[in-house]
Length: 344
Image: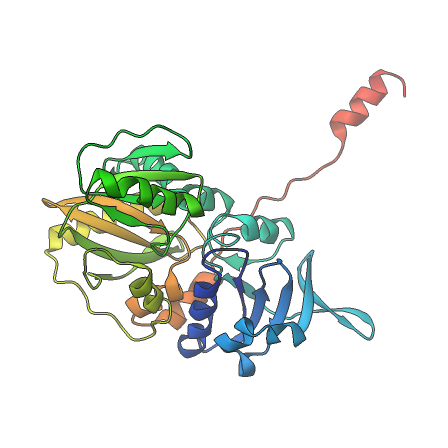
C-alpha cells in the first residue's frame, strides 16, 4: 500500500508537522510519498530519499515537483500534460491550522481522495478548545471548569493560579501559567498574539495526566497503552516538540484496572462515530479518581506511534477501513416537475 503523507500547511505548527512526518520513515514499512504544503499553500512532492528538516528551512523544497490538487488526487506537469501521483491513501499529518481545523479534510472530501485523519465535523470540535468542552459535556465526559473570553472582553479572575490557553492552538503554543493578577494581562497578551479567543482554567498543581490513543476498525475500538507523560509544571512547547519525533516505545502507566476502564470509556464516548477514519490521542487528567478530558489531539504528534506495539499494522488496517460518503444522485426530478407544470 502506497501512503501519501501530506504535511506542512499555513500554521503555527508548520515546523512540528515536518518533524512528525519525517519520523514516519522509521515506523512505516509502506512505500511513502511525501507531499509538502508550504506556507503559501502550494504543494510539492518531496522525494523520500532527500527529505530532511533543512530542506524546508532553506527553501530548497521549491526545486521539487510542484503539484496541483484536483478530482481524485495530486497531479504534476509532464510531457503529456498532467501526471497523477500514485498512492492508495493520504495520511493527513498537518498539525494545527489547515490539518486539524478541517481545511485539508474538506478538500480531500470534495475531491474524493481517501484519507486517514479527522473529517470536517471532527476537526471543528477538536481544534477549538471551547467547542471541545461543550462536546465533551454533551457525551457525558467531565471537563475542568473554565471561562471563555474573546479579545477585548473584560475579565474577572480572582482565584490563582490559572492556566491561559489560546482556543485554536496545540503543542502548548501561547499557553501560560499565571500565579497573580500582575501576570494575567501579559499572559493574555501572549495568548491573543496567536488567537482572538482564550480559555482560562484553574491550574491544578501535581495533577495526574494520562494519554491514550486509539481508533475504530470494523466498529471495534483498538487502544494503545496508557502513558503517563513526563511531568514538569506543565508540558511546554519544547518538551512536546520532542514528542513529535518520537519513534521508540513508551512505558505503560501503572494504573489500577478501574481507572484504565474509566479512561477508555471516556475515550469511547469522545471518539463515538465523529472521529471515524482517524487515529486520535486523548489527554486526560485524573483528580480524586475522576477522569477529565484535557484535549483531543485529532492528529497527534508522530501519530502517537510510540504508544502502539505494531503501529505499522494498525495504520494499514485503518487505511482499509475508512468511512465512505454516501453518493447523492441528482436527477433534477423536482426541477423537471416544475417545468412540466408550467408547460415549459
